[in-house]
Length: 330
Image (cartoon, rainbow, N blue to C red):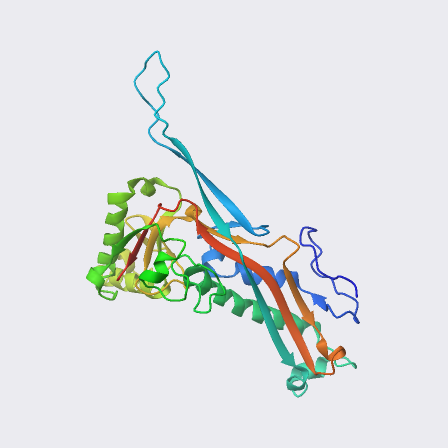
């Protein structure tokens, strides 16, 4: 049997159809790319993305304290320059989905099948896009809090799907400064401003230099973001969000001039303050190990099924492990 694994390093060869009688089926690599890159946190550029990794990446950071000293005849280095490293390790993931042709024959799609009962190409594309979209939504949650089954490895805020102290301690942001929001009370539209102030003050107190970093901002989920929009509307005394009158668009909210990044996969009652380059998302896209296929198994095993298979790997890490604040209620 021919080896039909596609080498992503050979660019622009996406729309390849393998011989009809080959079990490997139809290659559909753009869809695995769509799945991996569609999570909002990634698609909107709220993280630094590194593609082409085979297994892991070493993220190096050069630390330099104030280098200027009084002039003297001797060399008087304070040994203040240091190199630190963070390791981002990928976790292998896959998608295995199956659909029976018998469920398709009675529909309008069935009218477009050829005489051999093969699915129309447009439906295959639709099927792949739907699976990729669902996988992307799952990845959005996975990169933040992982999952109870441990398939995602460690996320930014948890390693087991639960945002609590144990999960945070095992997450990529474990070494961020931790700050308690609203004395441990759940976040509402009445106290979201206090929660943001708590995180901002923690940044000022422990990492004031972060405020000057390009891309510095506050990360929160849609619910928290909505609470802040409601708070601003109420504070506007009838003039709408941020006193903008009839301009009620909720996108682009800021706190003290710093952007707020809306990430659906984040848990409730969580605010992260850091800069985009410090939140690193790695993938094996553009390597030999990324695959997406539509496999007509009905041609080979006596079933009436079509399978969708995707294989890829992802991982998250922080660039500088202490450069951030996590606000939470525990």
